[in-house]
Length: 269
Image 1 (spheres, rainbow, N blue to C red):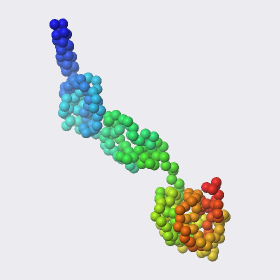
Image 2: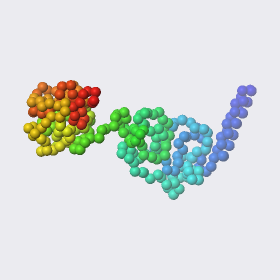
Image 3: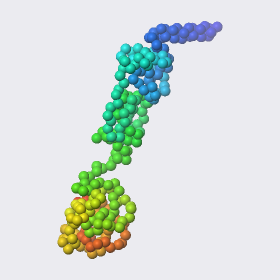
């Protein structure tokens, strides 16, 4: 009998609580024991992701209504346009996209896959899929570029290439036979230009000196049977076919060609 009486009291208390809670809600609101973390509001993307867990009990807009942030009232969606202007898409940078529901923890070089709640942040430009935010420049880059060293500045008529040719055209051999294997990333002459090994510059073929006019530079020697893959600071032991190239100046034994075309000792590379 005592247990039955207690149950009745609990039921009455719950009923009174619900009645009181409902009476405290405003027009077009309902009391929710398990409130939503992302109540529908004017200007909000209705397809935006949301945390699927209970918030504290409170009054929220009834189904079909949205919260007007200006008056804090629940209004029909068609009344939103005159009250709250949606954020105009801004001009985003390279590899960025404009999102209405931004992430509060965008991927960065130091944390490419952050654990984050799915609640919406304000409309903003964020990195496109497959890109992360670089800490220093603020640019959106590929993850593999995060730890990459800065690209060197190349000289005139040259460009930096990730997959270099192992047999770059030179004044001495303007059409070298070469395999298609990638060499290390470095500066190489643009198409239509050849490297003058005496200066390290990229010039037009017609500006090359004739062999009879050529004098070898310091630490170089004239080689009648030249190699197509001269050892360099970037690649000290290149794999190469044993085939004679035309006579030309090449580094003496124990020296290596550096990025500016000079032959230097390994410790000077």
